[in-house]
Image (cartoon, rainbow over all chains, first blue to last red; front, top):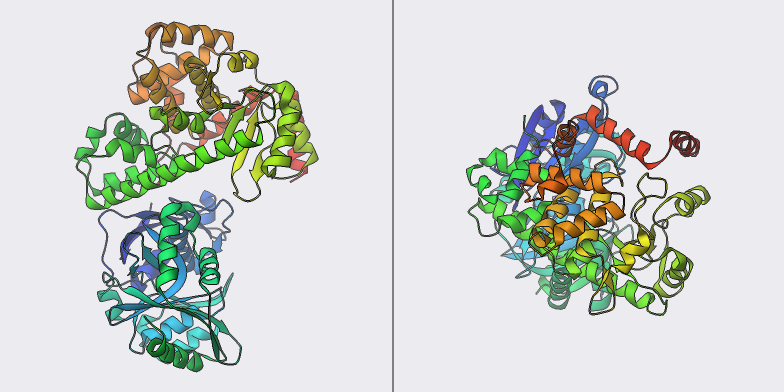
Length: 286
Length: 338
């Protein structure tokens, strides 16, 4: 393809090809310092639907080794988001070496906190904040569970901050770690945050899962214990490849559920969430 | 320019990958995924020297293929149970048949839908049993599509299982009723061979005839490299058996597929170096080069290339499937319905 950028995130290498220069330059800025894979695990393609659409009302189609038949194109201004979505798509549809959970992962003392929940539960914001407050950010989107020993592999892509979360983090981090503000995307206003040097430098280090949290935003602070069956079912829904992995996926998920304590937490604001996490880490984490 | 000849060479002669650089490997993997041949390739390369990343990706692909195999066999078993009380033979086709019989075409193969063949006169009973007892349902209820399938196609509209989310295609013959050749469906079933669980598979020559029909008529040569790889593997499995090639010639004639079989043999020989019977394959024809070019129309990013040629084959596939007036009517109806 005309333009290309390669990056390694944790144990996974990507190459992103593009018909346009813009998204590639933005990727290169955001992922500065990430190692370059010699042979990528996955290819992502950003391409024009028709040749002339490179120039006339350019719209970015997202493709790659694994594709969704009905992925809608994005405007060129959102090209960086398209690249991110393309990488997510490869992981969600093509990754078979790890059990993938839609979860943020943070590490402390070699142990991992997993934060899962539906879109809007606030896991990215919480992960970004904790990542600036003494935790190592292992990822805000996917937690990679090793199929053989159950450990969590780091996948510290740029954190995707939605709407007000972008402003919140802009007050906490150096401006060069923030990507461009993308307004009116299908997911609202989005701004990417480059993980800090610790998160990038130690992306090869795995961690043993120690606590599972299911946060819910907008309620008075509370936390409840969860039964294994409920945790199991909710995690099958939070996994993109549980079914595709068959028996190996079942074994990995069953081990996770049996060995890691889980809590559902409600929180009215992020400060309260951070406080709950710190308290549960001391009281409940394995 | 890089095209899918790279992939074809790697499949046919895995040693050729020993000379690949990083870019070559990246291209090979992207192509193999796009052509749904990554599992087959991973098995072919097993044991050879390769970069760590590639070894890892191959191990992943082999694991996926093992899971696909298990799922395919399970779907076949589910269909067998649902149809146990319908008094008719049930013949497994394509991927499920290859893995059920342990043929090399099944090794590493990606298997999507379950395809079965039943006699046309029991279709109603089969349909009823699958829906009432088996838990399958129509993918989409659309009166025009439904009528079209029933009047003109070689299979029922696709079914999907309510819980397992897997597709099932019920065939009563192996080519659309509107296609020019008319395979002898009754004889396909008559000559089929029983497996230990009561399900059946086509006889070896009929398996080739079906793979050939599938390669040419059932689509615009999309997935052609994989379909041709099936044919290569099947011919290598069967080619040494006594009387196989004579039987293939006779069965091809019976199903009015002599010319397509000949062309498939020539293409398999050209692309995968398949040992074939020269009398059946016949002399090279000018059109062969176009087929070869179409089959390998994929670049190192896994993208489709040679768009005009692809379009030509697409149009041709529809022209083969139905007469012009009918094609016009069909496209008009589909277009109006959006």
